[in-house]
Image (tube, rainbow, N blue to C red; front, side):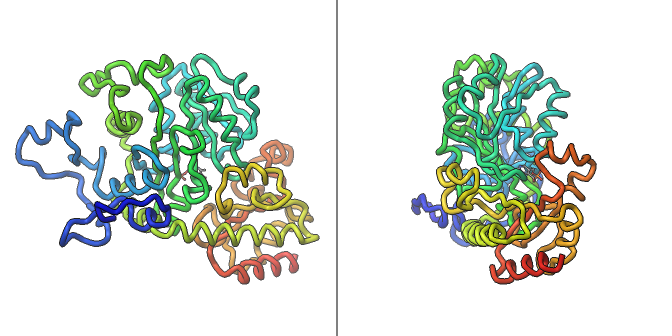
Length: 427
Ligand SMILES: Cc1ncc(COP(=O)(O)O)c(C=O)c1O
């Protein structure tokens, strides 16, 4: 975007934010496939290490192509700083470890993505970080009763994968603010097109950019975006208020702009190496250029599919938050602007057999272990992602045997509907 162009229109930001070419430079943000950067004086590099100057010196800590994506997604989410990571998992892991050490605790919405749930309740637990799960529609009282003196993060997903619940932002944000606790929201499935969590009380937003941001299923990646939060003298965040011996005594809370992002970059990503590659940043940035158009079509297609499923006598239940009558409809309309993305789940009459036949009958929708790209897809969790669970276990996990999950893309709605209709009729 040209230097003097100021806009807050999300469509324009999708297309142009993050990259300002100089005269004669490439119009498209290029791939800077270089690990290192050239300097002449020792002092120039020293100033970068001391964070006195902005610039790149080693691609584990920052890279110009990743920088373009960071600046764009930061603008899309209305943040003050952003950091690309190697995956959505590493974005959430970095967001938590940036404030939590062994002996700390997080409060987390129960319906989050299974991979994140495992990360928190198995891997982080093994590292000494404890977790209390609460409902995505938890009341203030329920949230307050989960808070402990050592609670460092309250975590949820705007639209949860695969439960498709919508987070009670108001209650979560109220409790986080009251107790001075960082409120972290994974906005992967809503994207900034449908929700901007930082405007709904969140302090940090994370994404698996692998999903709608890339949108073409080419690149695994993640990003963390920082909003406002006062770490200074907050007794919960000692590591922000004490000098970091591993970074020549830097006190992160003293950094005026984006202290969370600086700490995550120069301390955690420096040590763990969970950065995004320039190639993936390039491809993901291309994806974001059409994010607004894709989300509009994905969401309108998904609503039509959900309406059709609701009207079919072969269907036991349908879950889509923007469907009138859905349990989450009021919450969805309150927090999601213009749509609820492409994920739908529904229950087929006839159990597991009917589900397997339905999937084999499909001619357009493909069976894949992925959601949220521009191609419509389907999965039957009971025979794939959750196949190790017993019938009782499936019910406990909220994934009954007859549940089918759809990720609706941007093909013509007539073709999508026709495929689903014929696949149901042929069972
Ligand atoms: C909401 C959400 N967060 C995080 C992740 C993890 O992302 P990745 O697969 O990029 O590591 C996923 C993956 O499906 C997800 O759906």
